[in-house]
Amino acid sequence: MDVKEYIKSGILEEYNLGTLSPQETKEVECMRKIYPEINEALIEIEEDLEVFARAFSRKPPAGTREKIMAAVQSEKREEKIIPIQQVPKSEEKPAGNRSGMTWVAAAAILGFAFAIWQFYENQNKSLEIAALKTENNQVKSEYQSLEMKVAELNQGMEEMYDPMLKKVVMNPVMDDVESKVSVFWNQNNGEIRLDPSTLPEIAENEQFQLWVIRDGKPVDMGILPKDQKGSLMAAQKTMKAEAFALTIEPLGGREQPTMEKMVVMAPIA
Amino acid sequence: MELLYDNYGDTFYGIAFKIVNDEGLATDVLQDAFVKVWKKSENYDSSKGRLFTWVLSIVRNQAIDALRKSGRRNEIQGDMADVSISNEPSGSVDQDAVMDTKTMLSKLDTDKRKLIEHSYILGYSHPEIAEKFNMPLGTVKTRIRNAMKELREIFGNGR
Image 1 (tube, chains in turn yellow, brown):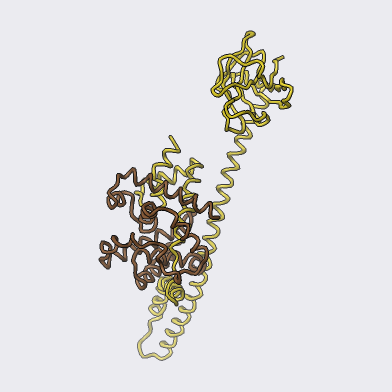
Image 2 (cartoon, chains in turn yellow, purple):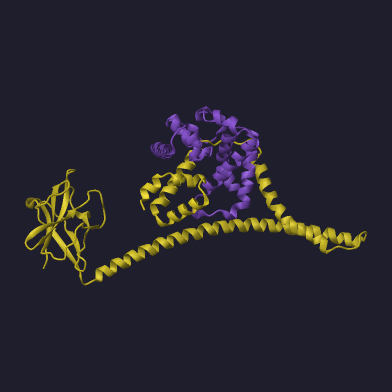
């Protein structure tokens, strides 16, 4: 799936507006879990929306806060009042009995007090539950990202211990260059990885190109992207190598290496 | 709930007012929305979005409902978009930050502002906007996205 196209499609904005169908909503929820980019885009939209919405802020008439808080509380109370009505019913005594009436009244007062107590208890609990839920979600997502990192590290470790993975250090060739570049060559499948972070800065119109010397001839292994950091995998694979080398070439690379612009090189023992 | 009100009450009231354009009605909307939030708070799932977004959509829907009930949805549609943000009485707003946001918003051109206002504040769906502004649906989506991006840049520079 093309994540960029998906983000561009406008579906995420509609998700935040709540105008999507339940099925589409589920789809977006699923997508945000799978693709971190989508999740980030959603968070960004929400933040923008909040900033934008704040521009419309307006002071409500005086007393609104009290009115609303009272309304919120009475709402919860209504629900909790139901059990009180059941109390007098179970205490039904012959009418006119004075002690019976007191009983009913006492029970009602007790029930009412209990309902108030329960209301506050519930209010506290639901706040607690909400806080716990948030915390739980955070822990969950932290755990997931850790799990992914561990899996990545494990894979890296396995590769490191693979006897067929050869680490080759390319040493500087040019006088004014001091960089050393490590190349990891997997002799099982011919994959080559390298970390370009130690390479020197080069001009806008130049690019590094990786070469392998095979049967005495240089063979193009691909050009290094200019803007990417971290471990790179070569475009080409090779099962045979006598040496690896990096040269500086014009943008797009060349078919044959410019030998005088060779930066680093390593012969394979 | 007090916390929610103290942090966002003015914003939610402002949105409600923007939609219904009536103080009394906006207060009712805000009250009904808060009661709804309170009753449904168990439904809120933070993995699906921020609390603000969730409450905002409840406020918006409540306001649109109220407007429909009073039968004024059509009457208001027309002039509401023409109310410029900077024309609102400054006394109605108490935070400097909000004023800053407004100044920044005024940097965005009117057409773009109208689009995001209709979408994010007035709660029009993309197809509804397309119809109202007589624009292809795809254009509406791209323009809203771009407008938000531009807005983000404006805010970014202001910070």
